[in-house]
Length: 215
Image (cartoon, rainbow, N blue to C red; front, top):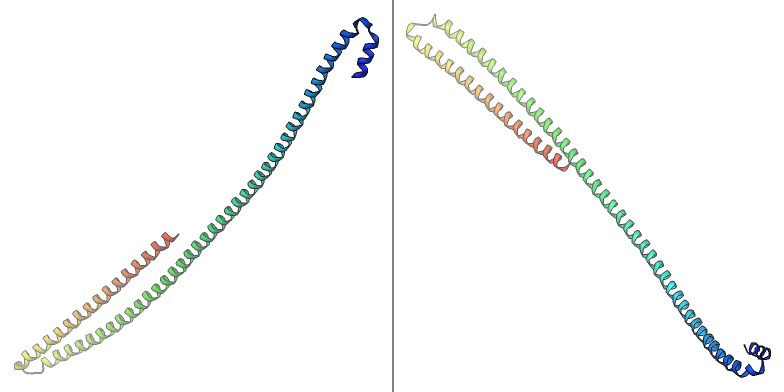
C-alpha cells in the first residue's frame, strides 16, 4: 500500500502533493478500517463456520443415536412379535393336545359303555332264555298234571270230584301266578335295561357337548 502511495506522489505535481497526501492518508485510514472489518468478518465467519461444524457434528451424533434407537426399537419389536408367536403356538398346541385327550377319553368311555351295554344285553338274553326254559318246564309239568287229573277224574268217585276240581283250580292259579311273576320279571328287566340305556345316552350326550365346547 505504501509503495502505491509513493508511486502516486512521484507521478503528480508538487502543487498537488499536500492535497494528495491528505487524501491518501484518509484513503489509507479507510483501507485500514476495511481491512480490520474484513479481519473481523473473517474471524466472525470462522467462528460461525466452527459453530456450524460443531452443530453439524452434534446433528450427526443425534442422527446416529436415532438410527441406533430405531434399530433397538425394531429389535425389541421383533423379539416381542417372536415371543407372541411362540406363545400363540404353545397355546394352540395345548388346546390341540387337550382336545385330543378329550376325544380319546370320549372314545374310550364310549367303547366301555358299548361293551357294558352289550354285556347287559347278553346277560338279560341269558336270563330270559333261562326263564323261558323254566316256563316251558312248568307248562309241561302243568299240562302233565292236568292230563293226569283229567284221567283220574273219570276213575275216582263223584264225592272226590270237588277236591280234584279244587286241586285243578289251584294248579291253574299257580300257573297264572307264575305267568304273572314272569311278566313282572320281564317288565322289571325291560325297565332296568331302558333306564340303563337312557343313562348311557345322557352320558354320551354330555361327553359330546364337552368335546364340542373344547373344540
